[in-house]
Length: 269
Image 1: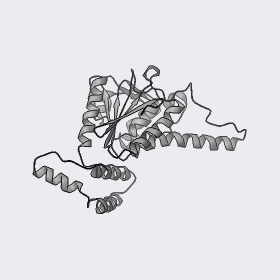
Image 2: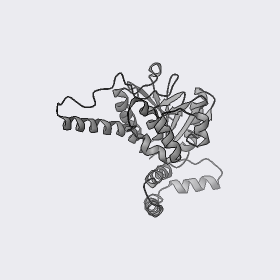
Image 3: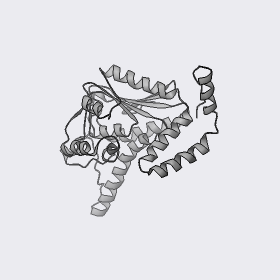
Image 4: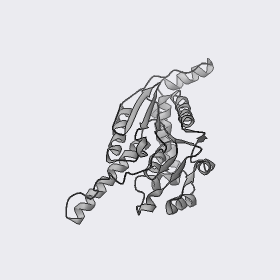
Protein backbone atom coordinates (compact mmCIF):
# COMPACT_ATOMS: atom_id res chain seq x y z
CA UNK A 1 0.00 0.00 0.00
CA UNK A 2 1.45 3.35 -1.06
CA UNK A 3 0.11 6.47 0.67
CA UNK A 4 1.20 10.08 0.29
CA UNK A 5 3.51 10.05 3.32
CA UNK A 6 3.79 6.33 4.15
CA UNK A 7 4.38 2.96 2.53
CA UNK A 8 2.96 -0.27 3.99
CA UNK A 9 4.45 -3.66 3.04
CA UNK A 10 3.43 -7.01 4.51
CA UNK A 11 5.43 -10.23 4.34
CA UNK A 12 5.98 -13.24 6.60
CA UNK A 13 3.42 -12.03 9.15
CA UNK A 14 5.18 -8.65 9.57
CA UNK A 15 3.81 -5.29 8.41
CA UNK A 16 6.45 -2.66 7.73
CA UNK A 17 5.26 0.96 7.79
CA UNK A 18 7.81 3.37 6.31
CA UNK A 19 7.79 7.17 6.49
CA UNK A 20 8.72 8.19 2.95
CA UNK A 21 9.41 11.94 3.07
CA UNK A 22 13.06 11.62 4.01
CA UNK A 23 14.14 14.65 2.00
CA UNK A 24 11.80 16.76 4.17
CA UNK A 25 12.96 15.05 7.39
CA UNK A 26 9.60 13.21 7.46
CA UNK A 27 7.82 16.20 8.94
CA UNK A 28 4.20 15.49 9.81
CA UNK A 29 1.96 17.17 7.24
CA UNK A 30 -1.84 17.21 7.57
CA UNK A 31 -1.97 14.17 5.26
CA UNK A 32 0.47 12.25 7.46
CA UNK A 33 -1.98 12.03 10.34
CA UNK A 34 -4.68 10.63 8.06
CA UNK A 35 -2.23 8.21 6.43
CA UNK A 36 -1.34 6.70 9.82
CA UNK A 37 -5.02 6.02 10.53
CA UNK A 38 -5.46 4.48 7.07
CA UNK A 39 -2.32 2.35 7.40
CA UNK A 40 -3.28 0.88 10.76
CA UNK A 41 -6.86 0.25 9.68
CA UNK A 42 -5.36 -1.77 6.82
CA UNK A 43 -3.08 -3.65 9.23
CA UNK A 44 -5.96 -4.42 11.59
CA UNK A 45 -7.81 -5.95 8.64
CA UNK A 46 -4.90 -8.24 7.75
CA UNK A 47 -5.38 -11.38 9.84
CA UNK A 48 -1.89 -12.63 8.92
CA UNK A 49 -0.08 -9.69 10.57
CA UNK A 50 1.52 -10.54 13.92
CA UNK A 51 3.98 -7.66 14.36
CA UNK A 52 4.55 -4.16 12.94
CA UNK A 53 7.79 -2.28 12.33
CA UNK A 54 7.64 1.48 11.84
CA UNK A 55 10.75 2.66 10.00
CA UNK A 56 11.75 5.82 8.20
CA UNK A 57 13.87 7.20 5.39
CA UNK A 58 16.53 9.87 5.19
CA UNK A 59 18.75 11.41 7.84
CA UNK A 60 16.14 11.72 10.60
CA UNK A 61 13.28 9.51 11.75
CA UNK A 62 11.06 12.60 11.90
CA UNK A 63 11.43 16.29 12.70
CA UNK A 64 7.87 16.35 14.03
CA UNK A 65 5.01 18.64 13.05
CA UNK A 66 5.35 20.35 9.67
CA UNK A 67 4.81 23.94 10.79
CA UNK A 68 4.79 25.26 7.21
CA UNK A 69 1.85 23.14 6.07
CA UNK A 70 -0.15 23.09 9.29
CA UNK A 71 -3.77 23.98 8.58
CA UNK A 72 -5.77 26.53 10.57
CA UNK A 73 -6.73 24.61 13.73
CA UNK A 74 -9.41 27.12 14.72
CA UNK A 75 -11.60 26.92 11.61
CA UNK A 76 -13.32 29.79 9.84
CA UNK A 77 -15.93 30.76 12.40
CA UNK A 78 -15.66 34.21 13.93
CA UNK A 79 -17.15 32.96 17.18
CA UNK A 80 -14.50 32.21 19.87
CA UNK A 81 -16.44 29.28 21.33
CA UNK A 82 -16.80 27.61 17.94
CA UNK A 83 -13.15 28.21 17.21
CA UNK A 84 -12.28 26.31 20.41
CA UNK A 85 -14.61 23.46 19.50
CA UNK A 86 -12.93 23.23 16.10
CA UNK A 87 -9.50 23.19 17.73
CA UNK A 88 -10.58 20.53 20.24
CA UNK A 89 -11.78 18.26 17.43
CA UNK A 90 -8.56 18.92 15.50
CA UNK A 91 -6.37 17.84 18.43
CA UNK A 92 -8.53 14.79 19.13
CA UNK A 93 -8.05 13.68 15.51
CA UNK A 94 -4.28 14.03 15.80
CA UNK A 95 -4.33 12.07 19.06
CA UNK A 96 -6.33 9.32 17.40
CA UNK A 97 -3.59 8.94 14.78
CA UNK A 98 -1.23 7.61 17.44
CA UNK A 99 -3.85 5.93 19.60
CA UNK A 100 -4.39 3.49 16.71
CA UNK A 101 -0.71 2.53 17.10
CA UNK A 102 -1.00 2.14 20.86
CA UNK A 103 -4.17 0.06 20.51
CA UNK A 104 -3.03 -2.02 17.53
CA UNK A 105 -3.75 -5.66 18.38
CA UNK A 106 -0.11 -6.66 17.64
CA UNK A 107 3.18 -5.31 19.03
CA UNK A 108 4.60 -2.30 17.18
CA UNK A 109 8.36 -1.68 17.01
CA UNK A 110 9.88 1.70 16.12
CA UNK A 111 13.19 1.65 14.21
CA UNK A 112 14.64 5.12 14.79
CA UNK A 113 17.57 6.86 13.08
CA UNK A 114 18.86 10.37 13.72
CA UNK A 115 16.49 12.83 15.33
CA UNK A 116 13.07 11.89 16.69
CA UNK A 117 11.62 15.26 17.53
CA UNK A 118 8.34 16.62 18.90
CA UNK A 119 5.55 14.58 17.33
CA UNK A 120 8.09 11.83 16.71
CA UNK A 121 8.28 11.25 20.47
CA UNK A 122 4.47 11.10 20.57
CA UNK A 123 4.66 8.43 17.85
CA UNK A 124 7.36 6.20 19.35
CA UNK A 125 5.91 6.33 22.87
CA UNK A 126 2.75 4.83 21.34
CA UNK A 127 4.87 1.89 20.12
CA UNK A 128 5.62 -1.18 22.23
CA UNK A 129 9.36 -1.32 21.57
CA UNK A 130 12.01 1.11 20.33
CA UNK A 131 15.42 0.54 18.75
CA UNK A 132 17.69 3.40 17.69
CA UNK A 133 20.94 4.17 15.92
CA UNK A 134 23.96 5.08 18.02
CA UNK A 135 23.78 8.68 16.78
CA UNK A 136 20.03 8.91 17.33
CA UNK A 137 18.30 11.20 19.80
CA UNK A 138 14.90 12.33 21.05
CA UNK A 139 13.59 15.78 21.93
CA UNK A 140 10.26 16.82 23.43
CA UNK A 141 10.58 20.03 21.44
CA UNK A 142 7.07 21.45 21.82
CA UNK A 143 8.19 23.66 24.71
CA UNK A 144 10.51 25.51 22.31
CA UNK A 145 7.59 26.62 20.12
CA UNK A 146 5.30 27.52 23.01
CA UNK A 147 3.13 24.39 22.88
CA UNK A 148 2.15 21.87 25.53
CA UNK A 149 2.84 18.47 23.91
CA UNK A 150 -0.69 17.22 23.25
CA UNK A 151 -0.58 14.07 21.09
CA UNK A 152 0.44 11.49 23.70
CA UNK A 153 3.99 12.04 24.94
CA UNK A 154 3.05 13.53 28.33
CA UNK A 155 0.52 10.74 28.92
CA UNK A 156 2.64 7.75 27.83
CA UNK A 157 6.24 8.62 28.61
CA UNK A 158 5.70 8.66 32.42
CA UNK A 159 5.09 4.90 32.11
CA UNK A 160 8.48 4.55 30.41
CA UNK A 161 10.83 6.92 32.27
CA UNK A 162 11.30 8.24 35.82
CA UNK A 163 9.17 11.27 36.67
CA UNK A 164 12.11 13.59 37.33
CA UNK A 165 13.68 12.84 33.97
CA UNK A 166 10.34 13.18 32.18
CA UNK A 167 9.90 16.64 33.63
CA UNK A 168 13.44 17.67 32.75
CA UNK A 169 13.02 16.58 29.13
CA UNK A 170 9.58 18.20 28.83
CA UNK A 171 10.60 21.45 30.54
CA UNK A 172 13.93 21.96 28.74
CA UNK A 173 13.37 20.37 25.32
CA UNK A 174 16.97 19.11 25.46
CA UNK A 175 18.26 16.23 23.40
CA UNK A 176 17.91 12.78 24.94
CA UNK A 177 20.63 10.78 23.15
CA UNK A 178 20.61 7.08 22.37
CA UNK A 179 23.15 6.16 25.02
CA UNK A 180 21.18 7.87 27.77
CA UNK A 181 17.89 6.48 26.45
CA UNK A 182 19.38 2.96 26.61
CA UNK A 183 20.61 3.54 30.15
CA UNK A 184 17.05 4.30 31.23
CA UNK A 185 15.64 1.40 29.10
CA UNK A 186 13.56 3.82 27.03
CA UNK A 187 15.00 2.00 24.01
CA UNK A 188 15.41 -1.78 23.80
CA UNK A 189 18.68 -1.68 21.90
CA UNK A 190 21.12 0.61 20.10
CA UNK A 191 22.41 -0.32 16.63
CA UNK A 192 25.37 1.00 14.68
CA UNK A 193 23.55 2.60 11.76
CA UNK A 194 20.26 2.86 9.88
CA UNK A 195 20.51 -0.54 8.18
CA UNK A 196 21.45 -2.18 11.46
CA UNK A 197 18.58 -0.60 13.35
CA UNK A 198 16.05 -1.84 10.78
CA UNK A 199 17.63 -5.30 10.92
CA UNK A 200 17.36 -5.28 14.73
CA UNK A 201 13.70 -4.25 14.58
CA UNK A 202 12.92 -6.93 12.01
CA UNK A 203 14.66 -9.56 14.16
CA UNK A 204 12.44 -8.59 17.09
CA UNK A 205 9.39 -8.67 14.84
CA UNK A 206 10.25 -12.16 13.55
CA UNK A 207 10.62 -13.45 17.12
CA UNK A 208 7.25 -11.97 18.08
CA UNK A 209 5.58 -13.24 14.90
CA UNK A 210 6.63 -16.81 15.74
CA UNK A 211 4.56 -16.80 18.94
CA UNK A 212 0.86 -17.52 19.38
CA UNK A 213 -1.03 -14.55 17.87
CA UNK A 214 -3.90 -15.08 20.31
CA UNK A 215 -1.56 -15.05 23.32
CA UNK A 216 0.34 -12.05 21.93
CA UNK A 217 -2.85 -10.04 21.44
CA UNK A 218 -3.90 -10.87 24.99
CA UNK A 219 -0.52 -10.02 26.47
CA UNK A 220 -0.49 -6.58 24.81
CA UNK A 221 -4.09 -5.90 25.82
CA UNK A 222 -3.46 -6.81 29.46
CA UNK A 223 -0.27 -4.73 29.64
CA UNK A 224 -1.96 -1.70 28.10
CA UNK A 225 -4.99 -1.88 30.36
CA UNK A 226 -2.75 -2.41 33.38
CA UNK A 227 -1.36 1.11 33.03
CA UNK A 228 -4.61 2.47 34.48
CA UNK A 229 -5.59 -0.37 36.82
CA UNK A 230 -4.78 -1.50 40.32
CA UNK A 231 -3.07 -4.88 40.70
CA UNK A 232 -6.38 -6.41 41.80
CA UNK A 233 -8.19 -5.03 38.74
CA UNK A 234 -5.41 -6.28 36.47
CA UNK A 235 -5.57 -9.77 37.96
CA UNK A 236 -9.32 -9.88 37.45
CA UNK A 237 -8.91 -8.68 33.88
CA UNK A 238 -6.34 -11.31 32.90
CA UNK A 239 -8.37 -14.06 34.59
CA UNK A 240 -11.40 -13.18 32.49
CA UNK A 241 -9.25 -12.87 29.35
CA UNK A 242 -7.75 -16.35 29.76
CA UNK A 243 -11.11 -17.84 30.67
CA UNK A 244 -12.33 -16.59 27.30
CA UNK A 245 -9.34 -17.40 25.06
CA UNK A 246 -7.34 -20.33 26.46
CA UNK A 247 -9.76 -22.82 24.95
CA UNK A 248 -8.27 -22.27 21.50
CA UNK A 249 -5.67 -24.39 19.74
CA UNK A 250 -2.62 -22.17 20.24
CA UNK A 251 -1.66 -23.44 23.70
CA UNK A 252 -1.92 -27.07 22.61
CA UNK A 253 0.19 -26.29 19.54
CA UNK A 254 2.84 -24.47 21.60
CA UNK A 255 3.12 -27.27 24.17
CA UNK A 256 3.25 -29.98 21.49
CA UNK A 257 5.98 -28.09 19.63
CA UNK A 258 8.11 -27.86 22.78
CA UNK A 259 7.68 -31.56 23.55
CA UNK A 260 8.50 -32.49 19.95
CA UNK A 261 11.41 -30.00 19.77
CA UNK A 262 10.08 -28.20 16.70
CA UNK A 263 8.86 -24.73 15.80
CA UNK A 264 5.14 -24.24 16.44
CA UNK A 265 2.73 -23.37 13.63
CA UNK A 266 -0.17 -21.09 14.50
CA UNK A 267 -3.24 -20.23 12.43
CA UNK A 268 -3.80 -16.56 11.57
CA UNK A 269 -6.39 -14.73 13.60
